[in-house]
Amino acid sequence: MDYVKHLKEERVKAYEQAKEVLDRAASESRSLDGQERESVDRAFAHMDELKARESDFRSLKDREEEIAAVTGAHEEARAVSVPVLSEPADDNALIRSLARGERRSVTFESRDITTATTGAPVPTSFHDQVLSIAKTVGPMLSVSTVLNTASGEALEIPAMTAYSTAALVAEAASIGESDPTLATTTLDAFKYAFLVQVSSELLEDAHVNIVDLLATNCGQAIGIKVNSELTVGNGSSKPKGIVAAATAGVTGGTGVSGKFTYENLVDLVYAADPAARALPGFGLMLATSAIVDARLLQDGANQFIFAPSASDATPDRLLGFPLIENNAMAAVATSAVSAIAGHFPSYYVRQAGGIRLERSDDYAFANGLVTFRCSLRVDGDLPQPSHVKKFAGGAS
Image 1 (cartoon, rainbow, N blue to C red):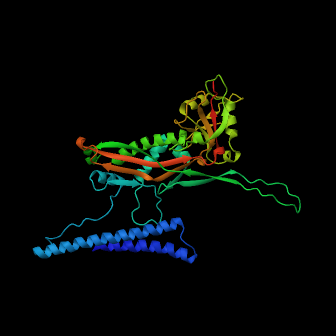
Image 2 (image 1 turned 30 degrees about the horizontal axis):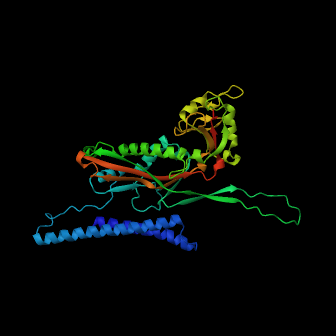
Image 3 (image 1 turned 180 degrees about the vertical axis):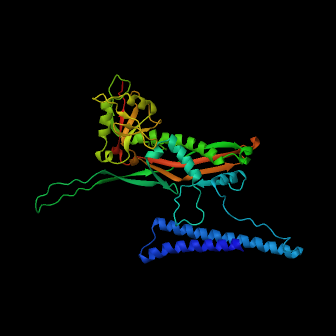
């Protein structure tokens, strides 16, 4: 049987991949690291799955032979088409299988595909499409450091709040102790979700690209809300946004309705930790309306401080630094934080699990609608507050 032979070959392949990892660790006299353990566990799980498929196939063939023996039919007359127990080929098929009632939920993960991957890895196209759209409408998901975890238990991020200091020491004199100060920032996993309903007729029409339809809705809804929380969230049962986590840098003058000047922005940039300013990823972040104000500013030589990008792949620049447009930032106003400057990868975003898509036929059964629930669990905070500084408009 060709199908059984194929399953056996796949099991051997998975075994060889796991054995290679185990042999390498044994030759180096060490335990498996996290990535190796995950690779071995995945290989063994795939072997078990293949064995179960082979058993199901053989059971079907045995029943076919029993039926043929009872009926006395000829071999040609009793040929039975045996279904291949396999996963849908792509995300479109996975989502349509939700509509057909073949599955109740699907979690779309972001998983690297390497030579150690066994079998058919979880499809990533839906996950990537959703996050691509979310990053477009929510820049905090693009410029921050994103940590992906499989589950949502508390995750601690260490940070050094004060460095050791050295001192001049005379010959044979006692050397003083100077320990750094360490602190930890805990990231949780807050759930953001929404429902979207699609008619059963639309799901049944093959020409409709269900992946694009749902990815656009999920990406827009999740991206806008999550970006807002990662920008201005207060940290109370929600992420602590980068604005709340940043430290005070510059306060604008009075009588100008909260507007910043060229000098204010220069002071803001240089208020940040010099070490952070030297790192890739340092820049300024403003809302669209604030960028309009910044584009009109000139330096002492009457040169505009805004420089448009020559490529869509790179951001515009302000004072020579990358400029990030984020409409979750406040507009220019008295006492409003309308600009921040800092090393944005210092802000950590924790994403627990993948994009989860679940389906219900019962919720809107009377209307012939299939209800999808899209959810994502995230949190965010800035372990090094000195890496990002904020400008606040004058109080009056």
